[in-house]
Image (cartoon, rainbow over all chains, first blue to last red; front, side):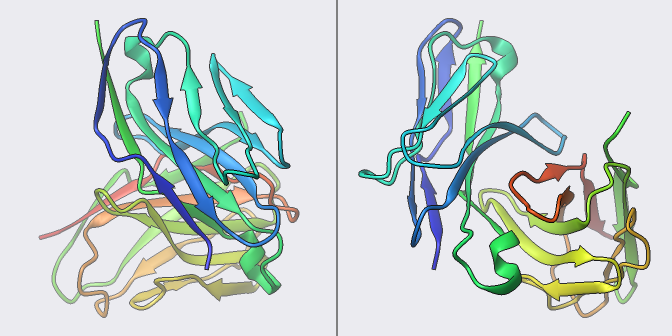
Length: 117
Length: 112
């Protein structure tokens, strides 16, 4: 079945440091890929997405490129801020799944990022 | 403003009690979903509904029930059969072509 593997956290950085959170996936066909962010005590917010190979999703200084050859969708930001402290989830949706299961999002376990001033 | 609301923010359940979590959306989305989040486990799908009066089990439906009588509403009941209900519950919605799911703020359920 489909699966998503994220780098284990927690990740602790100083303000203005470079961020990479690794995400790899296993799925048949061409899934859509997502990064969601969860701030403390809140629900998930869509951060960015990519729907086909070589697409780059970007938002709020974060970027991720859909790499079909390495089945990866790593999240990067050039200069993190204290306000970026949150849990980040990588997820996929596989339109090849039959019936209603193509609605399903498969999530990684999340990576906690803490940015210190 | 368009969005998804969940209530209550915190809910306490006694042993043997059924409790119902509310989820309402005004995004005019056809599809709605319930996820359970446990620490270090990511999110797992409980139930989803593609259209009014129809719903399907997700990966961990045992001990839960849902209804979808209105497009805007998708309440989740945690029954007494759910032996480990303590978790953070998230509701989401999407269009019929579900490219992006939008999430509510969540309800934290605790057992007394």
